Image (tube, rainbow, N blue to C red):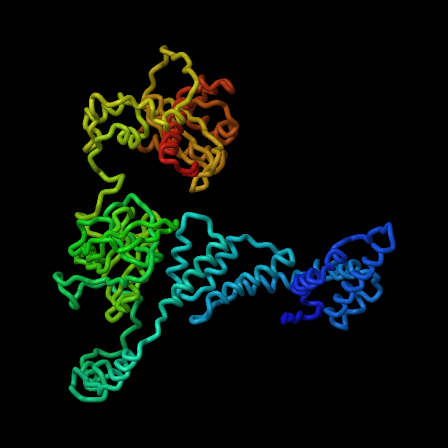
Length: 611
């Protein structure tokens, strides 16, 4: 038997919803083509016309049956279904401002309570968005995803953080899929208590309670009146202020330095992981369902063997070669160092980083994970003391370890034995410059072999140093003192604004010393203030007097105010010929040097131009 769906009749306020459902009814009855038109068709024979009249009557009848009687007067004079449909659409679809505002307010304010069904909540948000789309109020897919994540309760904070820290764009489809997986995972963790466990729980609950402080029966130590009365005598007055979210203090009296803090994991689920270059360090992962380590030397106990497969984020599988216990030295917020014991850690040597699972830490019900901006703290629930800290670096929280045991990063002062590595770190300098730096010990712990290969094959240099042939050099140049002659020019606008919003680079070069000073500008007009500032600064700091300035005659360098500034200080301008860059070669060559270095570094590191 087919179940009939009741559709609310059109009442003047529900056009968007009614139109969507009504379209489904008309499609079901195969009469939608009669309604979805703008003119009456012409007929060549009587049979075709009779069929059209029949379907038109069916469609018109369905419309009348699903319109409230108070609104029948709108379509009473209509002879055809498409005329009635178009009249309703013209009158009510265009005036949806109030409905659009109402639906947007509903979308932005919807909240999910703890314990509610997650799938029902996702469907509610998507249904509101579908209503907005139906009345022409389109929203960005990312905005809908953000509204959905914002409406989740605090118990889903770890899931929300994991989704927001992904490199990919935030899409509603991906968010709903992740939340659906989380719902299935949480539903599977709610296990039914066995009969014997219930009996034990009932027996433990009904055992007589004995206070460990006063020895009396009927209460526990936390509700001991005698103990509280004795402590009350020692108070200096007043109640203690509300405890902060966590405490950072020196009295770790609950455990000594020889006692290890244990994070225990249960062996139930798969986990996700990604490769990184911070080999040996521990990343705190809210999406991982296991603790995992890729270094066999960190295990103090390891049960080697085939323990199944590990499913990573892209769906691939890798072998788990062991399960064991790891000891790690960590640094506490107060500077002290202690041992961290992590149990039930999976040994997977093919994973790029070591991971500590937040769900497994929380599952022990002894610790609480608190995210506090640039740091994350693991607290003891009973004492609220910090037992581990992680720092936010490169988009992840990394467990804080003592400086002596922390692995050196790519930018640390490590021994450089590769010519290509030294070449990249020194701004893609030439082989001659690199050998001079190493021979004069200007770079610490760098080694450059005398038989080093030619670096002409460097892709960053090939792409960043393509230039025209040089102009002839003027050997009859006059010698100038310190800051007597300044060359300057502006480079820009750049293709992409910098992270700070700058579009131009003003570069000032001193003829006497060859020193360069650069200023990042949002507008060309800002160059005047920077020039005045620089000229006054060199006069005060070095006692030097600027005598000449040389530029290409651009408008920003030839304003009336800057001319008056030069005249007051006896500075003479040397304006070069327009569009003859070789005449202003010193400034142009300096800009080329700076831009070339930056371009080479961007190509080599494959970074965006905004950097």
